[in-house]
Image (cartoon, rainbow, N blue to C red; front, side):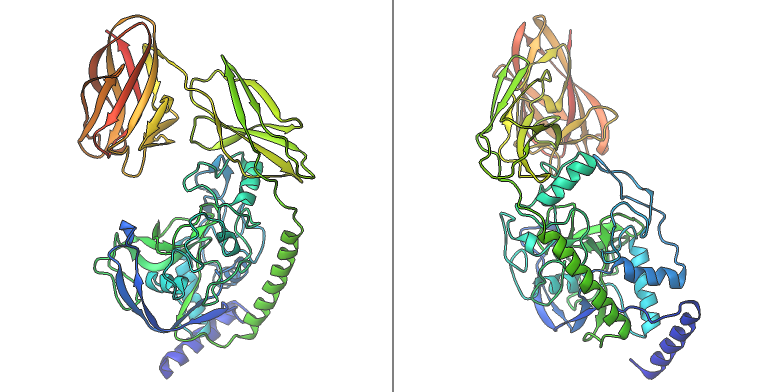
Length: 548
């Protein structure tokens, strides 16, 4: 840095102390050596083309910026942070409600990463820190982040590929069995069957963890795989065409959205090369950041050393708390379901582990969706109830020990019911589906719709069981959403292919229309109706079968 810049920075810093007395806590930094790497992922369209990037030496925060560090910035500047944040759990995250970096439902320690801020607040923090210290602190670039996270490795994670997700809990705070226990307790909701599911291990943190509790990567950086999502300097651009090759930030894209990297405690982890994006003004309960600096890591100031010492004590205390927890129960075995009319009977093998207090039964609204607690404090390996719903349900039984439940294991499923016709048949009432999945619908009514990445798949097949009250001709209509005209689907009635039903564009995936279909003959009693998709980019909420 030139002398005049040092003098200016010193002058600004001295004036800032008139408002804020005390030496600012500079983040604990790690020197990242210069080098080149292949950025991107040949298996991920959003991270292509894979290209060579040469990164000069820089330093990066060993940890994500904590509440304690961010507090100094707010007290020094009176910066107006967001006053609403997505931080409340009710089935899953509610929409934004009152809460900020200091008062939210998810932070319980000054040494957790600061959340309920936005990209703009993170950027303001780095500028304040740069002014106070005379060092040009900033947000990391996307290239720097991936280079630093990989730490010279070429696998999905710096500790390997971990396809079964059994090792990640040693290195990251992710969606796991411990988090599942707390999520069910606090919000009666689940990671099971949600988005990317949960890891097959225990990380002992339900929400954001105190920083530095997990093993670092080869460069000495903690929480790079997952703890909170991390804001980066780059404007977000789809793909890497035209991206800088020198490790600098890309600033020519949609700067209303900024690039992000890493996962958070409420998502399952994903490979280090996977990219994310977030509106610059969005404040969420799982979003944070760390800082970067050109050149090698500076000598730690007295304030930084005090912070590191107090953080160490907090880590030791937290580790003792985690070590004191008992083991989780094993998976319940030999779960069986007997269905007689409306009556469902579940049986399973009684656990032979010591200390098992009982069992819990979980069920979902429809097969493949998130499970909710149905019964608890069961002492014997049997449960019976009436289940009159025509949708397929998944039942799970878990053992409980010291108020902790084990993994869900294999589901026991009910048989598909018969939808009454004439009437409306919900998309999720299918007896069997393939190349598609269920998601909460954005339509004005209905619970779920059939979709997938890029909508319903081009090879999708949906089978429906219809109980028809009277033989005759019936007209069909479909509640669909599609961003473009599609080839639609072939209609098969009782094993006989009838005709093709095209799905016309509606304006987007959240623009729903009821589109008229064909007329078919249905016999009285039981009939099967199959939709065989011929294209993607469409969704189905329901179909209606009317007489005449």
